[in-house]
Image (tube, rainbow, N blue to C red):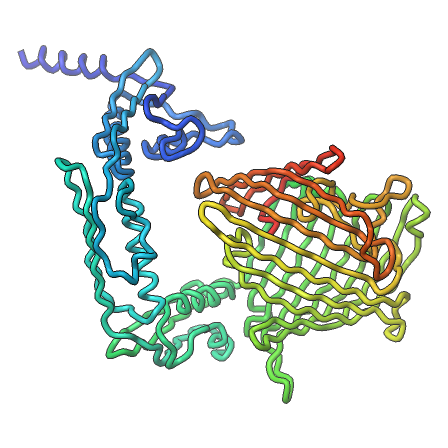
Length: 562
């Protein structure tokens, strides 16, 4: 009898164990994007399809036993989004699992009780749908403000009372700040051979200042960016209004080799390799040697950087020496360029100042006589002022950036040509969630006419997007000749459909002056739209720009224009 019962059980399990190749969501789902779009629901069910380029990987196969887990995960997710009466049902066909989601009525927030000074941080609003994520993020924002304003030892009691019978949520958040704290001493346990003064220069807080978690994070980030430590620990010990900090540093491997392979519409297929030593000759001196290749040419370079050079009376400077060779095929001419650039840098009044000497030897080859085949030795002095208060270099959503650059080539320095070049740029980015508005203005001028390879050029993915790279303005024999002055303006609005995906609209306007100190040339305008996707390597960018007279250009790239 037992033998027959066991056979019956095994036969039942075998009959019920079935594989499916397709999963389908029906009911209250979003067709394109939203809280209940297909991509989100697959993620909630822990289902991952291989990327299209991984052709060797097979799509997942589902089993009957997984259906209950799918239903449970979808139900929990819907409830976290405020749909506590959600019903998730399933049915199957020959090869498909169908999951039907009926959200029903969303639960609303009936009342909110919290300290008045924190109400502006709240993502939860009375009378709106209650989402667990909004409640959690509200607590995090309050915590962040407390820790940025000197209250690391706060206490918070936050409750969300869900009443299913009355179908409402009551929120109660009480905060006790506790004592205000100030930064105290910093003890550095440094196992490396790096000068401790160089390490202390990375610390942005000062003893006696009000405690601020942001300054601790910035200090940690500065130490991490040095690229020499395998372990960084920053321990705080809050006691009686003071916060002493202990920093433990363990040196790691300072040498690395990096490489990349990519594509954009400006350079086409491009690749590169770079060797980096973050502690070349010790004390955070940096050595980089690399090569970059693209469809239009290649570049070989080396850079030596010393973060600390002491000059009597003037104090501390950083120093960078760059040597390189470039060979590029531009529209209209080929340029072989050998360059050496020595730069001194110093922070003064919270601004970055750079100045130095530049040597360029250019060999110009062209079948267009206007570009004048010749060799040019250009020696110049330069100065650059820089301020960067963006919240991210790769994907800024708030902040501003400004730079001013002046370059003076002089015959007295052995230069074949003499000119003054000025170039200024301002960017401003502001988030008004879910929108981000950005403006960029660049203006430059040359003091006199120069050989055309030293002109300003415009057009492309990072300039006027209705035109191809360096193709805006007047042409001779089909080749753009640029100008001795430029004003380049871009205005862009981004709308974030999801955290990682945005659509954009933009307007670009550019004028290239063909006469020295004159800015009355024609304006070239373009309008367009695009997409942004925040990937692990930065925002992937796709833009289509339309010129006023109808032509258009398409641009692909990585990183924001701003």
